[in-house]
Amino acid sequence: METVIEIRGLTKTYGTVKALDGLTLSIPRGGVYGILGPNGAGKSTLFRTLLGLIRPTAGEATVMGGRIGDPAATRRMGAMIETPRFPPFMTARQVLVWLSYAHGGVPTAEIEAWLKRVGLAEAADRRVRGFSVGMLQRLGVAAALMTRPDLVILDEPTSGMDPPGIQEMRALIRSLADDDGVTVILASHQLQEVQRVCDRVAIFNKGKVITEGRVSDLTASGERLRLSVTPLARALGVLGDRATLDGDALIAAVPRAEAAATIRALVEAGVDIEEARWIGADLEDVFMSETGWTGVQGAPVKGTDHAG
Image (cartoon, rainbow, N blue to C red):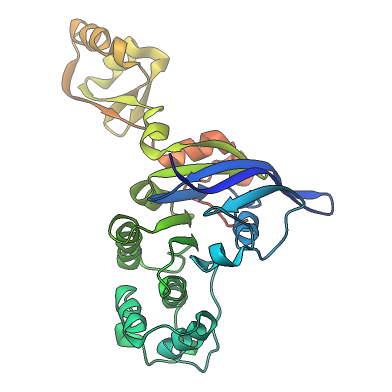
């Protein structure tokens, strides 16, 4: 597997706080790679380190074969870290032209193409002081992509967007990987969107990677059998503590090897089975299980991932 980023023992400390704690990770070239973790997990610190904005305390990392801060590698990267800020008196088009000067200029046709691709063509001549958070995110993504980088880091690109906007951004991110050959590294608190758009993910906690792999493999590890049955009480009596209620159905934690015997036992007990199908754990379940993250008074908070 060809890698685009190699990280070995990366550590970043601020006084007594370790934002990154001996982090080791390999990110493959191509596709969409998700970085997840609760507040303070080290995601934004990692991104800023990879971009050469802050120096690590210890360890090393290479990006596209070059060390952190290598100009040749940096020129092939694009990034949007957290909500972008732009001069409020400029229009969206002027912002991209202004930023393009740092890259020696970007052809006008390219700027127009990216404004259209992120959904800002009709707002291109509006001053950004009137932009919503979602529109600023779109402009930030266009700024990160207008030089056609080989690698792009997007930190919370759907922040402030409505559902149609989130779907559009998801489609754009997938097309970057599938059609343009860009490696996309994505951090998002929209875990369902991450599950839909990412090929692989790494889950961070306290500056370390606690699990990593293909999304399909991570979610398959929590595979369960969903049963639409009647009567429910009788089925629960057969399955015992292996089953939990899910509306008018049951979720049974049984391995595939025991599925046939389980269904046979239900039928023999006089349970009518309308449907039996396998379901995987979603990424929210994996995230909560791996991080052990809880909310107020210990109640789990699902679908939340803050940059940190």
